[in-house]
View 1: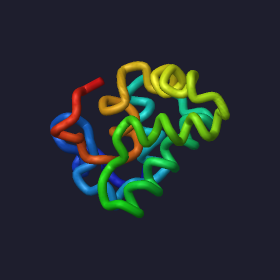
View 2: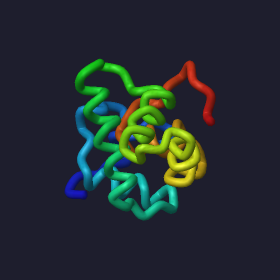
View 3: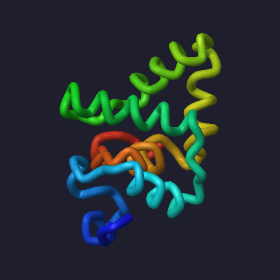
Length: 109
């Protein structure tokens, strides 16, 4: 990854500064979570990054599920797809790998 990412992470493994996120950091964080990123993962991660840039907050789960529903053209499968991609939860894995700060007010779902 070029630089020591450990210094840029909080005690729970989330990036301290989301602006430092790179795809290489995402790969490293995914590896720590036991995930190999596929195109479907990258689609979700890039949506989350765009949302963060546009709104200055991390998207909550419903925004990502809505994005997936549009991508899959099947809204009934969107939630299952999200949790298949990130089996230990949206906050624990998707937000972490996308370089978001840990959302304090959300469940760890």
